[in-house]
Amino acid sequence: MKRRELYAWAAGFIEGDGSISICRRAAVATNYNLRLQVSQGIVVPLERLRGLFGGTVARAGYSQNGSPRFLWYCDSNKAMDALKKMLPFLCCRRDEATLAIRFQNNVNLWVTRMRVGKKYGTGRLPARVVMQRDGWIAEMKAMHRRSGRLLAGAETKPSEPRLAVSDSPCSGDQVNPERTAETTVPIPA
Image (cartoon, rainbow, N blue to C red):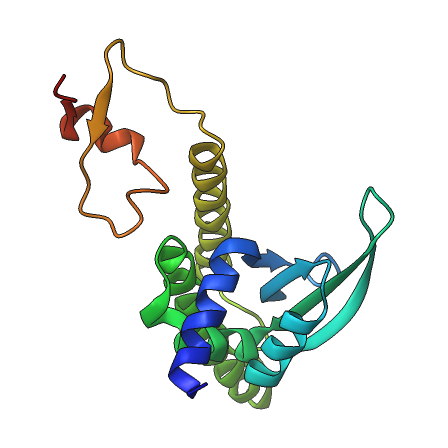
């Protein structure tokens, strides 16, 4: 398989079974982390992800039926590089990936500034940067909630059968509830 095809495969795999997260590490109040991960019962596709993007494959315990679970993950710049390579092929997680890339670029910018700052006696993140990062965490969590709710079928059904019309490439998987009322049409009998 060509590299581009492998990135497309990885994007589909991440869309189906992966997660993109930004979290604040509890040990240090201003230490943030980007993580890209997938949990599976089969280790082979996770090894392929590790070959493509680096990262770690580890045993992640056992499922409810007793079969082993495995986890592939990569953090920070490795996660950002992987997301950049998969971005052209992502559909439903494109917004999450874009936010994650923007977040990691900001972290990299401030890591450089902090190194210079320590030389001059200021080793702290400005409060506005902390607030911005916390805002990105909240935005990522909101994206996760929306996608979980919609994929679980929690949207309300109209009184008559309707067809959702969307320009989204994921329109078969998700319907944006904010736009549904404006973009639905009755299904012809």
